[in-house]
Length: 508
Ligand SMILES: Nc1ncnc2c1ncn2[C@@H]1O[C@H](COP(=O)(O)OP(=O)(O)O)[C@@H](O)[C@H]1O
Ligand SMILES: [Mg+2]
Image (cartoon, rainbow, N blue to C red; front, side, top):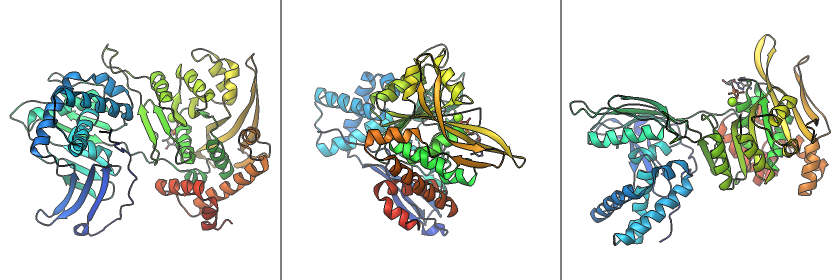
């Protein structure tokens, strides 16, 4: 029996908007290949139902699952589960369950094992009954008001609905609330009955804990992380960056360059980072690492992770950026995105860049010079020559234009050379000029020379490509294409068939 591949990021289906609620009858996959949801109008109850369809277990399969879960609970090291990647957790569950099936001498066919593996995954790695709902891209809120009452959800397109999920015992629901608390790095008890925390994926959780039999028991609400990122064309419409600047990032990211975005507090660094992440080639494996979840990418092949702080005086449960980043390189990503680089994780990041993992991130610094100084001095203390692995630095800043607060990509500079004594030479192909609120570009782009050498293209070809992509991005803005799914589709399509995309936009 092979390990089953559970796909946690199935393609996001294009759901139709349907004004007449009674006509809604939609089914889509939540956890491939196991779980889908059926959203339909219930004639009898006169309301919309969100029905999760999980694999159905026969009586003997249920019995085997129970036995397996019980033995696994005794065996499993919870920390291993919480602190590794989804893939290695599934491996762990697979191996442990195989061992136990042999040991307990369970007679289980391939088909039964497939289904049982799903439930092991769901209950040990996932969040039990609500795991499929959590995985639904369209869900905004999940609400449970106690036992024997259905869980309600809010759907991005079809709004409020009742689900077919409910808890039938206070014990079960209390255990579940304890489990979410633990996932938030917190704990609840009689003395501490209120939980306010966030899950590793950035979703906010509120819960009340009670095991009082006279009440309906514990309650919880989960407000899912649904931050919609700004797209490159939106940044053009805000006049934050020029189409040429964005096209430059596109070419750099396609060619696995390393890039940092610097700027002051709330200058728009993370917003720009997320917008240019749309340019990462569709098949590339991406990991992102943040303190609090802000990044959102409409792509498969993406592993977001969030650092968690420890609670109390115990160090248990603490996962800092440094260890997350070290761990992420073991997953051999093509691209690493670090939300905000602050301390010792910078050296791990630069070593990663040096070993061929393209990296992008933000750093609090107001220019390329202060950035280089910050990287060279404690607590980061990089060796100056290692900084040469960085290709370009984008500088974001606040600016007042026509008495309006705006954000500007003030310049993009390239690292030409950082000497042993720490002094640096840079080249600045793109600047914003405050006098006339315009963006200027220079023909001399150093990174293109590097790319040309490495990949056997000519600098002229790269310049031509820059102009084409700049025109495409401008055209997307002109046609008001700001939707993030659509933007990702166009960029992905451009990777496959640039001519067709340019033609479709009337640019060829
Ligand atoms: N290009 C922009 N134009 C206008 N407002 C912006 C722009 N980029 C970001 N903002 C706003 O500024 C705030 C901070 O942005 P963020 O990207 O988180 O900054 P930083 O990462 O530099 O702290 C956000 O609330 C965002 O809505
Ligand atoms: Mg930020």
